[in-house]
Length: 266
Image 1: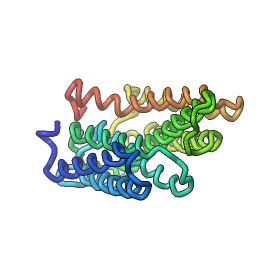
Image 2: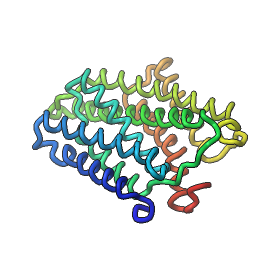
Image 3: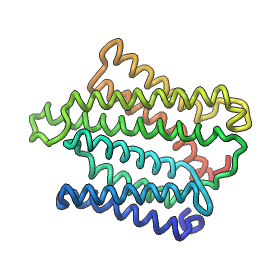
């Protein structure tokens, strides 16, 4: 927990980051476009420093909450890049709130100490998995924006300035496809190089089962899109289900071990 494991530097960085995110999240209707952009950029930079300190600082740690925090940072990175190409994209306040909550969660549950590994490939394996999380999370955000745009169209509500529905749909599937490729690479590495990465043979544990179920869900999504033209609510539901299964794979299993069972090194 926070009182027993957070260093003063980690505590200061996390609180500063959460406060920086809270500014554009709480004051999105009062801040100017330039001020909100600068506040989000400052929070994003602080967030990166916080993650770096957690992984490379005096006592490196990692767990379910840092994984959520890193995923949120990757989603915000994607948003920053997209904002340059699509200035009308509007999700700043929601993503800022997500970033603030993720940082505070990682502060309360910093995870277990990282042990030195004999395999130089293990960090790459982790990076592939976290990147897949980030891309699928970006897909979920775009699916939510797509649902919101579709709701506006169906109910003839006051339209908000934002991306067209077809553009959001195209971006949603692009992120889902990229995430599927990285997830496939992560699972293949686990299957064929488990002994090199972890020093033990491949085994069917909860993390593996949920990861495979998520892979099947996204494979069906992409196949349904290519063969049967899946789109709209059906596609969004599959994205949500697949992302939830993937969330349960690592984040869910580590939450049970770290918080419920209090066995962080299991």
